[in-house]
Length: 64
Image (cartoon, rainbow, N blue to C red):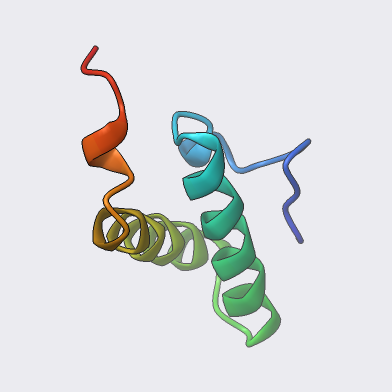
């Protein structure tokens, strides 16, 4: 099932918008390669978080 910003996986709804965009992009690419949905979501979240951390994105977010 391809995911969109309007219909992201439930596990991704807590992600900030730029990280969510990247996670959905990664998850859809993995799914197209034949990975199961659960693995796509887990890997996509981890990779998108690393992507954001390398760009200093989380350092600019206010603490909650």
